[in-house]
Length: 275
Image (cartoon, rainbow, N blue to C red; front, side, top):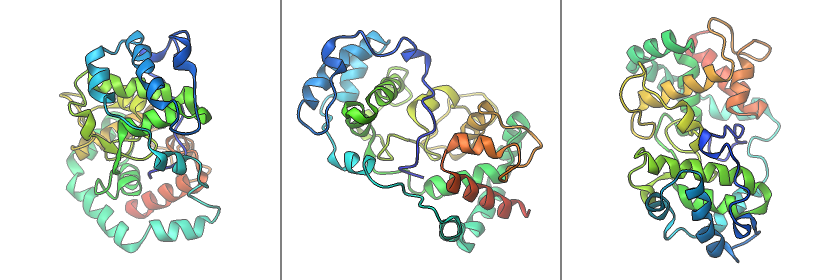
């Protein structure tokens, strides 16, 4: 779900030392485009101090501009509201349930492998996939590096997003993202078919059986496996329930801290599982 409350900081090792002490200019923040370009130039030095090569930083950040649309989204009202029944009715429709059941059948083999490996059932993963990007059909249209840089410059959550921006640059450094200027996702920087933040991509990206190179953007099975890895890493208990009040509801809340969203995912998974 693009624009959702983000799922924790999940800082990868590349930023474990923090982003302070890398030059006073990199610590400046703003509330608009003024000063953004100068800050971004200095931020490249911060990135290099955290293991990103100059070539990778240039490839991702050259030409990046402040995006006022991102700022407006970040300052907007909460998207989920307070009416679970209304939200669920519009997001767990007969059409979504039918499509979800079809995807369960289509990906039955990799989902079985994923459940054996992580203990997360297919209905939960397909429910998240459907809610996040309509089963991979809409992963977002915001240029990822512009979005992250805008939020990293903005004073509201600068430290958090500077860490995510470094992790996003590490995706380029490691060859995971080969065309950074073409990368698109949610306004808040989430990417891939289930919308992981860059830090979570680095930490949890995997294939169903753990072999090969995962691609969360183009490969649905990899995105589902990585979602399962995230949930398992955040306390998912195999064989336990996922509805509110059951043990695994807490893991869904780690995916998204909005209770209405978590309850909607649980309801969708119930429908897909025939519960």
